[in-house]
Image 1: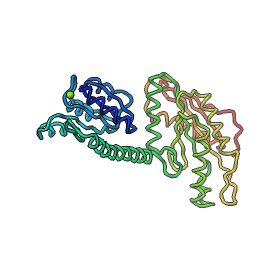
Image 2 (image 1 turned 90 degrees about the horizontal axis):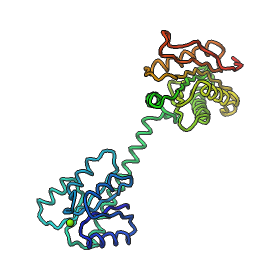
Image 3 (image 1 turned 60 degrees about the vertical axis):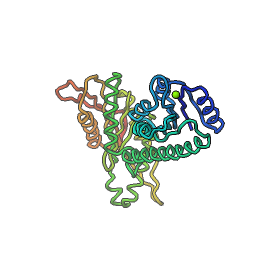
Image 4 (image 1 turned 180 degrees about the vertical axis):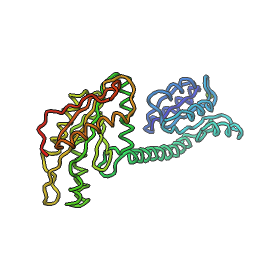
Length: 323
Ligand SMILES: [Mg+2]
């Protein structure tokens, strides 16, 4: 474990640090409360803090309080070292947030036993954190395709709009819709339909850069957020996606299905803020254009927040589309 020891008594400090290192711990040490707080605020948060009650600067209980009031910090198991034997003082220490205490002079075996208890708590805490992280990911994920779900991709879009504004970078959006997906379900059943969706999500994801975001917007609709991409970059990417989907058939049992995808693309180059719905609306309108002109293609609408009609005329990427 990573352990911080703070004690102004050099003898105690030396003995404890020496033993802890012998027991294989990674030890940081200091001789006053303010230095201890600096270490705790730094990047390497210890799993356990062994804090002297009385020392210059912040004392043990004050440090406990500060540690416990820190938000978003991994749990630090705190053992107070005290010369005090008065139960009321111990109550003060425990109320301040200490997990345990040792009364000086203490036996090293006792310290070792307290650390074992601390390790159990630290391990439990880490398990909780990873369980919570798993839940968080599950809450954001579309269970079928493993990409972001509707709410999470909209969150990602909002985040990227804010970033684009801050950094004055363009932002592009692709709204993609599988062509004739209903007939896949009707002809081959929903299990086949699900397999198609999974494979489409996989192929699309493979076309993206690590900082692009993709989510399942609706049944067979996908929303792709492309930070830092202008119209030509976004169109190139959409075209790559189109080819990745239609160029190789989807194998399902002994059937080869050819699947195609229509994509509406929009780009926002303007530093003004815009409602998220209007950006999606622009992509949707471009998508509608593709659907009405043969499908399996990409169309782009430049988004212009100042125009009366916020969409400048649409142009189609140079693609020979097949119906
Ligand atoms: Mg002291």
